[in-house]
Length: 257
Ligand SMILES: [Zn+2]
Ligand SMILES: [Zn+2]
Ligand SMILES: [Zn+2]
Image 1: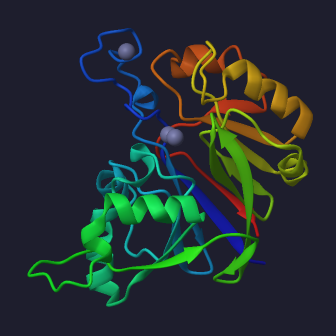
Image 2: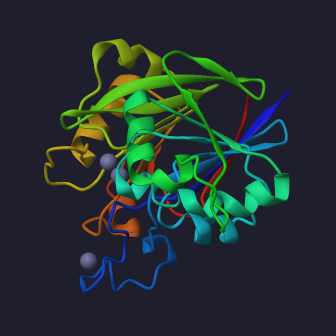
């Protein structure tokens, strides 16, 4: 039976933890699990390596995880903390001698083309530019022998996509999950949810809100992500139910696909 190895490349909010210039207890913590790079995950299955989002920390994340190949990128949305590492896929273009397929909603593909005009320009360049092949997501699709199910949600007033693969669902950067997506998230083995902090935020889920969602969706294991410096790793985990934990950079699990 095929298996999926799932790795948290980054588990932090857009500014990362520690946050520049901040000297709070979490930013000053010596616990490696309190060091959070920007949010992204790596899916390895059927000999392929797929990342969800390319953060500004993509290069250091890929070095840390010794990522030797990159077969596709799935984008959740076009915010800077999720896309700005796109330029760093170039070594994989060169090594694999191929463009890398990139999947996202049309709104996200539009943002990529606006933010990285040189990637999509037909004008010859004297330097290397990322080679990408854009694929619009508007329904579940097959990727290297596994079905990827998009899970639309709202991030404030903007749409984002979560992704479900087998019995794992990853949903970051959301504040509201529409009814049609709720059924896609029930009964997972692993459910990963945005939980920025305790206090409400206009575009992100909170610990309280995501706790309520876990009660509703009943995964075997839930992981929170996109945390800011309000949440110390050990201190927050101590207050959470046993099947819910804060994720951390480098966390891995394996599941049957
Ligand atoms: Zn984000
Ligand atoms: Zn801080
Ligand atoms: Zn965002």
